[in-house]
Length: 203
Image 1 (cartoon, helix red, strand yellow):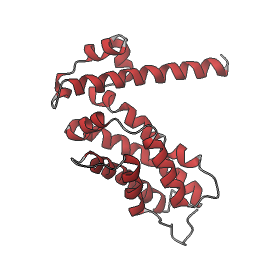
Image 2: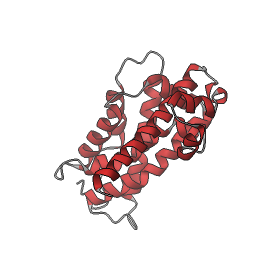
Image 3: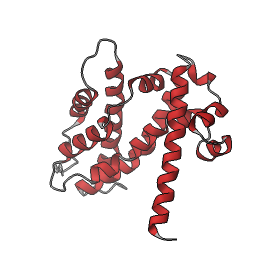
């Protein structure tokens, strides 16, 4: 099996995962405020063009399916930071990486509102953020030369960034808000950045 075949299979699996997730979220939104409780696995599978068995191969719950896009996005935060120029200061690199990751494209407002207004979905989203903190902390450690096994800075900074993203999302959804998500996210991240590890180095 060559690399092209492996890459194609990986892309196909990701496309199927995304199709199921988008279908689950769309159906939940269409059902209204209590949409999560009204959506059935069979309906999600049908809308995504897959079998219920295929659905179960990808997700163990409706909450996991609905939040999958946000989970995948959060997991890419560490990779996004590693892709920034090596000489860029830590605060500028983190802000640029996170803003680009979460605003291209801008979040689906109805979908984000559904997730943040449904306790079970918000809990699932929080779990995905927590899981993503590890890779982000590793990227911060690599950029600052910190030892993630002993230094608190990378993990604390990763948690602070994750918290800023969640707060920005809530502020963006507030009635009467006219600011873009990018502007709010940048402002939220600027509350915790710049920050430097012990010793004063920022990048």
